[in-house]
Each structure stands twice: as C-alpha cells, then as structure tokens.
Image: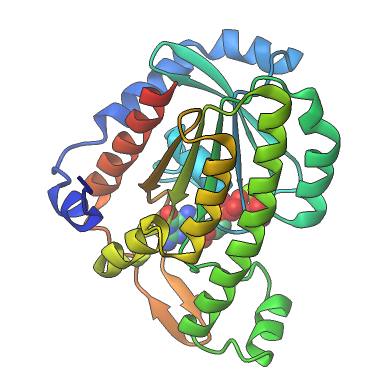
Length: 276
Ligand SMILES: Nc1nc2c(ncn2[C@@H]2O[C@H](COP(=O)(O)OP(=O)(O)OP(=O)(O)O)[C@@H](O)[C@H]2O)c(=O)[nH]1
Ligand SMILES: [Mg+2]
C-alpha cells in the first residue's frame, strides 16, 4: 500500500536530532581510520550520488553526515570536483562519491572513471521538483530574459531538463549493469520538500505514478535490467531549510521545524541502511 508523504510529514514526531548527532559522533570516533583510508584513496566506490546541477547533491551528502544541521554550516558553491566521503551505515563503511551536476564535469567522469569502478551497489539520483535556482546573476538574468519570469515557469523548465538528464543517467546505469551486474538499487531522492510541503502528494505522484513522464523513463530501465534484479525507492528529503527566491517571488521554507527535518533524515538513512 502506498504511504502518502503528506501523512508521513504530518506524523514526524517532535524529537531531538539525537540519531543524527549520535551518528556524527560515531563518525568522529572512526575518524582516524577513515582519514587513513581517505588519504590513501583506497577502495572502490559503493554509492554514487548523481543528478542535475543545483538540485542539492552536495548538501544532501553533508546532511547525511550531520554537517548541514550545524548552525555554522555554509552552503557550498558549484562543485568542481567529485566529492568523496566515507559513511558509516549501521556497521558498514561505504565510500560515497558525489558527481558534479554540470555536463562538462559529469560526462568525463562517466566516460573515464566509471569503467574502473566495479562495486557501485547503489545510485542516488537527486531531484527537486523543479525548484532549481541559478547559481549566478548572469544565468538568472538570461533565464528571466528567456521568459522564465515566474517560479512556475522556472519549475516547468527544470522539470523538462530533469527528464532529459534522467534519460542520460539511466543509460549510464544500464551500461554499468551490463558490465558489472550492479547496481542493486536506485533511490530517487526528492530533495527540498521544505519548499512544497503543502503540495507534497502532488510531488510524490509526479515521482511515483507510472503514468508520469518521469516514472515512465525509470520503468523502461527497471524493465531492461529486470525488476527482480534491482530495488527502487522514491524518498522525500530536506537537506537544508532555505527560502527559494526568484524574480521577486519567494517560496518560504516550511517543514515544521528542525525536529521534523531530523526525523525525515533519519527515515531516509534507515531506508538506505535497509538496502545495504
Ligand atoms: N529549500 C531547500 N534548498 C536546498 C536544499 N538542499 C539544497 N538546497 C539549495 O540548493 C542549492 C544547491 O545545493 P548543492 O548541494 O550545492 O547542489 P549540487 O547538486 O551539489 O550542485 P552542483 O555541485 O552544481 O552539481 C543550495 O545552495 C541550497 O540553496 C533543501 O533541502 N531545501
Ligand atoms: Mg555539488
């Protein structure tokens, strides 16, 4: 039975961020060992985080490490390099790579580096239901001059771009599967839910309903690989609470407080742990 995300958000218990903090402490305890691993850059990638530029991949990765919840956290700029992190999921250590979203940075990695990777068990594809801002003023002005002068128009533009990007990503995943019999799972991380809490069921529908253009693309790949060979999940997440401002319009961040976000992060992490 489908669990509606609106019910999920409504039921998020008022609880402290204990689990996140606990996990962060564990990371610190393991810190030395991890640092050695990281310095040696040993090990194969286990999880790949991909998606369009500015959808929140780096912030999601920071959020899962408990960093973006810290008061002193500063939002990252456009990623220029592949970001590598070690994560502790339950009792397992996993090497996670976050691939920059811009084509000129993403494509060379997929062309040159992915053939060397033999152990990618999971892909996390990050989406944001069209709430993708421009990084710089020039791009902002360009898009507005091209007619994207309201948030709704901007969203429609990005939703179309998202499907184009998804097609490329899915072809990459299919190719990877053919060579490696992996990944075992794909997660669609629907990020920035703090911006559309009131329309959360519409967002869930867009990313889960078989009739939606997004899901049609996913289903093609799942059928090509074979639905018994690969697990697939669509999960809501908020990596960082932030207002969305575009051409004098503002969508206020509203998730109902820090504890709701921590609960959502905890659920997201549990879902991943269950896949590992
Ligand atoms: N409201 C809201 N904004 C978010 C959230 N996560 C990320 N953002 C916004 O999205 C912006 C981009 O996040 P990044 O993590 O840098 O994006 P990225 O996908 O790594 O982008 P590239 O490095 O260019 O590929 C941030 O600066 C935030 O303004 C979220 O959960 N909610
Ligand atoms: Mg980034």
